[in-house]
Amino acid sequence: MNVAVIGAAGWVGRAVLENFAGRHVVRAFDYNPEAWAAYRKFHGNWEGEKVYGDISRFADVRSVLEGMDAVVNLAAYFGEGEAPEDDPSPFLINVKGMWNILESARQLNLVRIVQMGSCVVKHPDGVFLSSNVRSEEGDLYGITKRLQEEVCRQYHDAYGVSTIIFRPCSIGDSRLGITRDGRPARGGISWVCRHDLAEACHLAVTSDIDFDIMHTASHPDADNYCNVARSREILGLEYKGYFPE
Image (cartoon, rainbow, N blue to C red; front, side):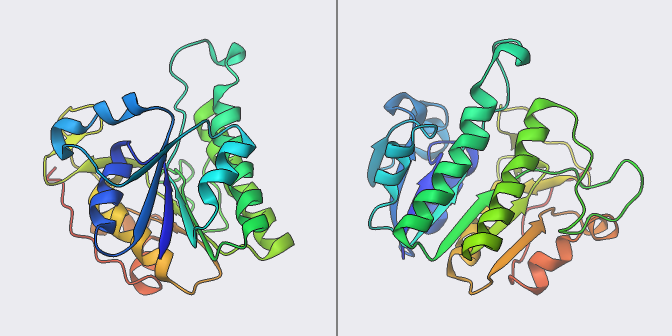
């Protein structure tokens, strides 16, 4: 399939590019050429098609999706920098960017959207987290990630846009034993390997599932707290990453 990967130069993005090699024709989208520097020491240079632009600009997003069959959105703004009250970036990137992708996909008749969301594994009130149960999110990043889910739900209900959303919590690299900022990845039920997420994206792109939201976590005890089993049973994802505690 022809797949646009948005946020391709990032922590999960580089794992997705590695996973998609020889399986899909990829168009990689990120903000600027400097974005590739962050993880070049682990992956070297990527020589496929690259497009640069601003996810908050509709024209940039629509352009990168033209001629594609599917899109994987990995772009996220975590809220570093300015005070949250004065920083519009979380809304422009996480929410407006999500709308740009969905509306562009609708106009261009893409067959699949894969969205990398975010969610805790254990609900603070002990509620089992299914696809229809939201975790309690009070910070700006968490709120905008919940809003992404709602926009995806609305587009599916209104237009039938086929979408799979993943809910990872702590994303590490089990092969390197590190987090995205290079620190040792400690064990626990919340962790998932970025290479498992990359395989999940491949399975989602090729799936005929109409709409679903799936938790992703490597630890077997995570099944007691959230619907991570669904990613194995419905999508066929096999978790291979392991983070010793």
